[in-house]
Length: 132
Image 1: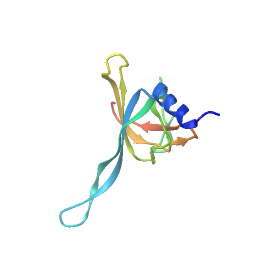
Image 2: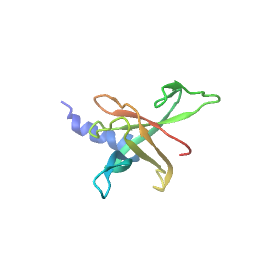
Image 3: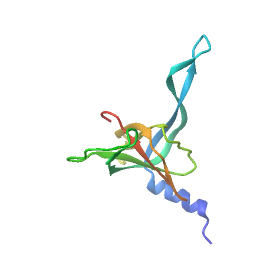
Image 4: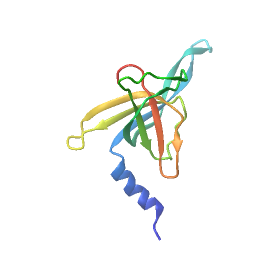
């Protein structure tokens, strides 16, 4: 019989070479006790093992409209373990590393869409605004 946890650890080491940080937007109280209209980022997880992939973006998550993809626009997709709770609207900073030198070769920042969760992993599309 195969131990699922052992297989999962091996899968994590082989599959996930990138890292991401996961933040939640929270309201901040002002000195007078009122809630601020601006929200700040509260770190939830740091250096989460992940894999960065890309998919063709054809739908804008926030305006709910089709996106003109001529010629095309790629959207980062983050794969990670299901043990990390990601809600729509969380802010993610994902970093891709050079496997030989360990240097960061790409960084992608954006808000998470609705995660697609399966038994072995979850996929989170990032809505990236501006240059990444």
